[in-house]
Length: 134
Image (cartoon, rainbow, N blue to C red; front, side, top):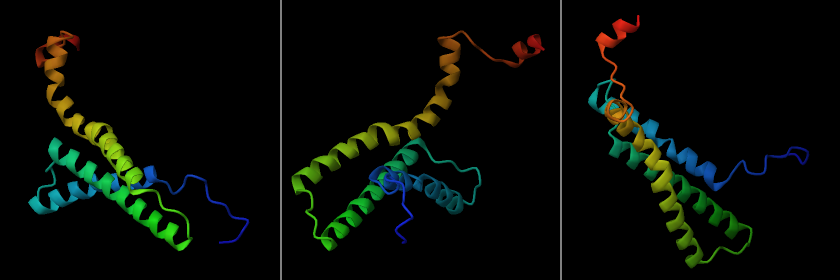
């Protein structure tokens, strides 16, 4: 690459690799559609959660593996195993709590929003009430 061309500083980073890995939800959805031959087959919340979490971890593994190879080739010190293990546990906890959890919450919310709207906010959208409004 020529010297006058510079890449953005955080173009290749661990969060970027995790995000790309997390896009396996799309691949999992496509695999379910092709396997069942039903274009309306949706992933269950557990399948969404699992594919997002595993995909994010795969992206993290790929980044760490390539980082170790580059550090070895450039004679740079690798992080200690204890530090890498604790970072892995921390990243897994964050991915499970936020990344995968958010993907799994969508269908759960869609399933319970009628109950919440009716019991908490007093909203009961029925056909009869819609005809009164129009």
